[in-house]
Image (tube, rainbow, N blue to C red; front, side, top):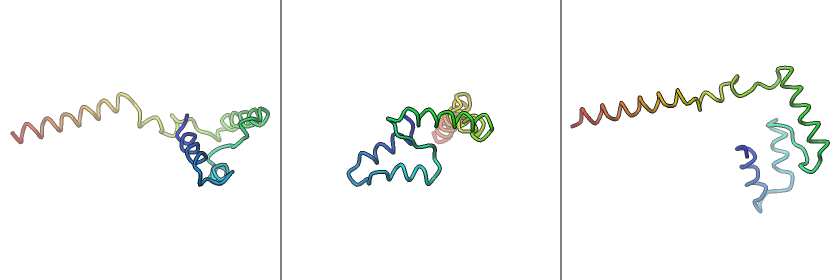
Length: 95
């Protein structure tokens, strides 16, 4: 479940949420295509639309827009190493 799905399900399950409010929010903010989960034809059309937009360059994969940079294992390992080294160095000079 994606972050948007999990957050939207929390809001839609809440008593204060008006019917269609999350759908309207997603559409207004252009966060994606909204379809009825029970409408197989709408789901198929939406998926085909997304594929076509991707092929035409309208949707960049996460690696292109830098989203995966935050989760690069080698970079995170270097960052952890540097932070631990700073801690060890700081503690060694304090003693």
